[in-house]
Image (tube, rainbow, N blue to C red; front, side, top):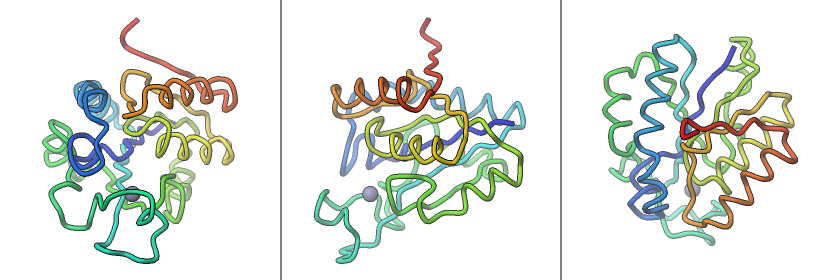
Length: 181
Ligand code: ZN
C-alpha cells in the first residue's frame, strides 16, 4: 500500500513569509494532479503542514527564520488549486499539523501508516532540501520505500534542491520519478 505525503505546500512557503518563489509556483499543477490521482485510487493522502505559534520563544526555528505558518493565518492555508481540492475532499485527506521539518517528528504519522499497511511513501512539496529531506530521512530509517516526485518538489535554493535529489537517490535508495520524461 502507498500514501502521498504533501509537505508544507502552503501560501507562506510558496509566495508568502518564507517563499520558495517561482520553483514553488511551478509545481502547483503537478501536486494537484497527484493529489487527485491518489484520491481517485482510494490511497491515503496526507497534508503535513508546519504549525507555529506567534512569538514562540521556545521553538528552535524562531532564531532561524522569519515568522511563518502561524496558526489561524491565511499563510497557513494550502497554495492555489490544492486548497480547492482539499476543501472538496476534506473527508478523504488527512490534515496533519507538524512542528518540525520532518512529518514524522512528534506526530502519529508512522502509527497511521502502519495501521494501513502502507510501506511506500510518495513525497511532494517544499522545500526539497529541508522538510522533504528530513521527512525522507526519517521514512528511510523507519523502513519505508521512498518515491520522490522530482516535478512536484521545489526549493528556493537550486543547489540544495539538486543536492537533495542526489542524496535521496544515492543514500536513501529512493526512486526519483517525474511525469516530464
Ligand atoms: Zn517552520
